Length: 149
Ligand code: HEM
Image (cartoon, rainbow, N blue to C red; front, side):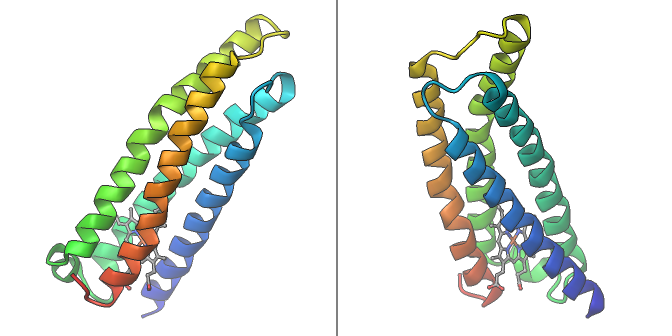
């Protein structure tokens, strides 16, 4: 019971932190971004990656060591829906991350570097799609926790 409580608490903290960092990145990512904000964006993105790994590790620990056990989740479609939505969020986050890393390198080579507005806008569009799939995850989570699906 104690382990389940600790894992559930960690899961919520990691998930809220992940979404918070995601929102900070969205706020930073605007046409005209340059200099220190570009560095911040790349740093926040690295934190986002680390938190995503923490969510996966703690999530898997909940599936394996939680009160309900693997068999409960394996038979639940909402669990698989949640995993699929999480995988889509992860896949969508790759192109913006690669772009931020490239911009950071360009900034290191030329401190006056600013990414083209078109690239900033398309990265933002991808992150908006990411937000839509992110929103599905807690809905699937609430369903799977109640045996719906
Ligand atoms: C951004 C990603 C994620 C979000 C936003 C999220 C959100 C949530 C929320 C809100 C709950 C509580 C549901 C409730 O009690 O009503 C929950 C529970 C849970 N999550 Fe996640 N989760 C995420 C990723 C994951 C991953 C990757 C896994 C597993 C690999 C996972 C496994 C679980 C488990 C096992 C529970 C317990 C459900 C129960 O009480 O039976 N989660 N999640």
